[in-house]
Image (tube, rainbow, N blue to C red; front, side, top):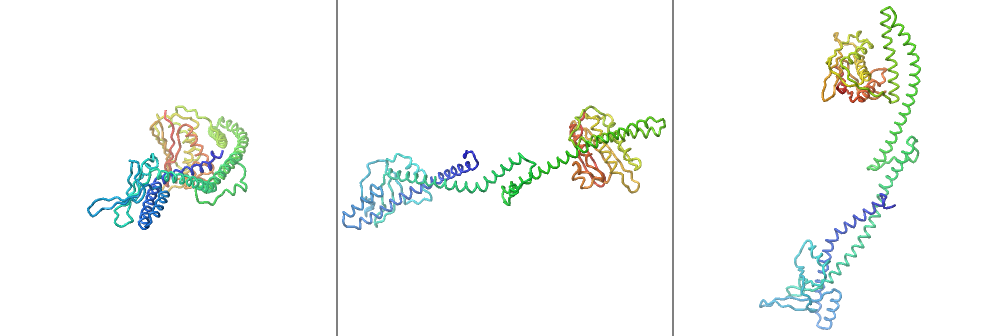
Length: 473
């Protein structure tokens, strides 16, 4: 229905508001009309007195009087004089004394900025049985005041007629104003919003469809909010379509990685068989190398699975249990330092975690978090240090409000600005050549899945500090 549409509501609201404004304006305008109506009667009565006294023929004066009373509705005109002895004399110019005792005096000699509103309400809503006595300045010399008597019913009829005319004009003005505002706002607001609503519906039904010529026309050059809304809508669709394309690329990447993972597992299985035999060799050196190779192959398999899992947005549900934090971090640090040649670079590791401190977390997930952070720290400190300074990797922990905060502190060169800007973004946050940026992204997801968090506390040329939060037992 038209009334349920925005344009219909706008038209009705415009008419209602214009009518309300007319009502507010009508009250003072009615009071001004009443005052003008009384002044016109007093002025006409003054002119009549001059005409009557200037016409010697009584029949002419009587004819003027009857026509005046017919046109103005006045029932009596009186002149008041003060004699030489101080006596007040009343001279009836025309008409006769009204039969009513209810006489309302209106002194037009008193100048007011605004007439009294209560008098207008009284004359409009009253019974109209009284008489209004108008006092005005005289037009004849020697007269003190001119009195004009008008039936209240005549003024009431004039006020009600004025109200009807104002009401009709108000309806016409409100309709005309409403139509003009409706046409203007329909073109400026309703049509663009309707076009945007249709665009949203079309985009919802076919979000991947390429933009056509009609959609290209939606880009508006308007400087107001509607133009901004149209531009933001076009930008939103472009962003969503870009996200869909990125999602398709990631899906393709996931399929490719699944195939690579399948083939790589076959290769690593053969390598694992060889490493197992080397680990059982009676030669201690070969046995040690075999065991190390077994661990390396296991980590390679886990890395493939983790990368595949990230591409598919799938992570195993954590199985929290009470684990000793110092032991877990020590194992992750030992593996990270051995893998990255920390001994060759003389990196010193300090584990300041209390041996009795425990966290409630998944051992595998937590190991992956600390292994990633510690490995990154070891790799960052594999640089030349002046004056034989020994790089230090330190881990400390504190417990507060049911959370255990683990601070991983290194004395490396710090993260570059590009790495800080994209720190936890997959495939973009790598701070070193050859990195993928998956490590920190996966680590933070693993921490949050256990009710914790991973954040960068500080980084500069003196080192970097990461904080891992995990629930306490």
